[in-house]
Image (cartoon, rainbow, N blue to C red):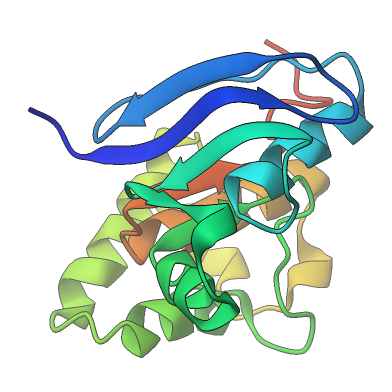
Length: 174
């Protein structure tokens, strides 16, 4: 049986009715919300930053409403987040934005992490020449699409158990 990452059990929010879903390791949930407010509410519920009007939200099998704040914050250490703007730190070079979270999580092989970062950019259509031209620059040199990809790469390379990506496809053509 696969590891339970996230579960909504009859969860209702201020912007949506009852919702039940389960996300196991290796799975994917795409929430197509009717407004950005509803989408943000869903993400905040999933991260335990907001309590549902009704129902239970479980993160890694734990009922978020039953946890003390310290315990909830400890669970959130295993959640990666990527938003539309990338949420990169403006005064750090792109490379520092990407590698510091990896080294913070004490990934033993930074060479492998570097290869993973370059591979992830290549999957997004941003080849090595793109990386060579931008990794030493600050995020203000990136287009909105490049910032979004960089934020997603940063969240993914630290290998969280759960990755929440909010509004990842907003404004991106097919």
